[in-house]
Length: 249
Image: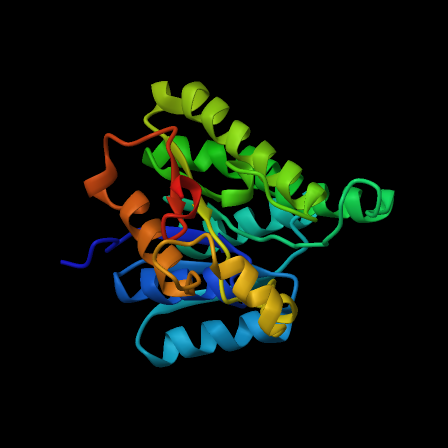
């Protein structure tokens, strides 16, 4: 039987990168997917691809920094599939700059999407997850674990995600809900496309990574699949680096 047969997964940031890869992998493993993203056309295409392969999925256009949008996404999951078993708080943005370079507006937007978005997803899905003894997976970052240049807003937001993960793991363990986060290293996604297009910057980012390659969306998707699976039934409060060894180098 497929690992996630009969499960319902809400995945934010599902239109591209880590979120898209996870939605597609979870669907092949039997999950019904509620694909959430701000990019309505792109997330609709993801859902179309899943259904054409025989999976079940529905698209929801939402800005995860807006509480009404997140609440509506959870309601869609329950109205469509009757339950929520997995919440993958993955939506994120990256606006570069050191503390003396980043505008207050960019700081606030980064925190609103990356940290507040994960909080709102948890807040509005936890009631359903308690019913199913489900699991929450958050996308943090290697930037939450080690110093990361010119990324103060991003690093701070992802550090908050990591701290929120451990707090929620303690809060909801008594309800049978597991909460973990994934800490990807530099990934080849839309967030890093411009940076990695510069050969000098790409080489600088690659240098500290022992495995000498960047994270692929499938790397994070398989980590998320493990954390969502029964095989991780005794795993909670963990920050799982998926970084090619970067944080230990």
